[in-house]
Image (tube, rainbow, N blue to C red; front, side, top):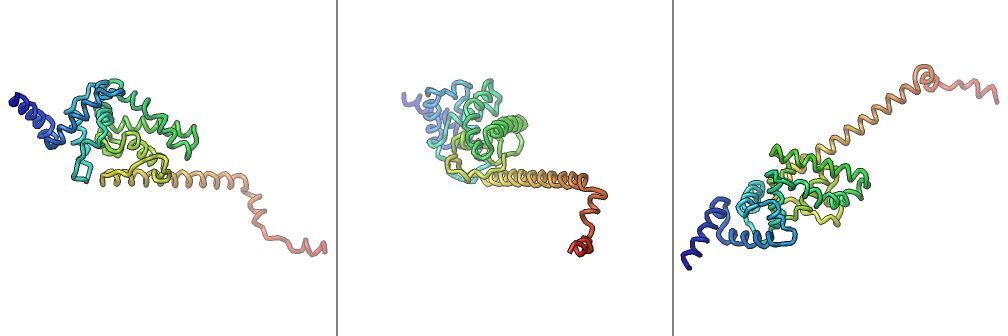
Length: 240
């Protein structure tokens, strides 16, 4: 009996701990959370046939972008980790479920700033870009390989969506969005926000230039000369 338990512990240590940099305690905590999640009502783990090793791999990959040395496995959202991993792997139905689970909450997050119609458009464009980034494994804050299980996936997505539409997440306390804990994420999010602000400035400049051209066409030639001509004081003096 004792030898079988030691063998089981050895398997956990090799398959999860040694391969993905977890201690035996962390590996066991992950297994407990994993199997509890698999039996839960949402059953994300079983829906996409994600293994505990795959979840451990997702954690290990996300830690490449993190600066915090400690890892509290028990505090991580295993269903969200499994869902992120399933999307990265292109599992059947993973992206559809991601959209179904979070589209409406993301629309509600941006609606106070953009209105319902624009919020719907922004969220759907966001999901398109999110999928493209992950298919290409591009360096971007939208890469789900960076998702570490904390904060909740909904908050992680909300923060990135608000940056994409040119809003600062901290402007609304009701969004429950947490600051990214990765220096690389902070840099990428800041760069994306700067690009968005630059695009806004360029659009405004283009609009102003177009309005100026329209004005030049309306008030052109003799009309412009007439408006700019000096006033004849003799007209006023003759009337007096």
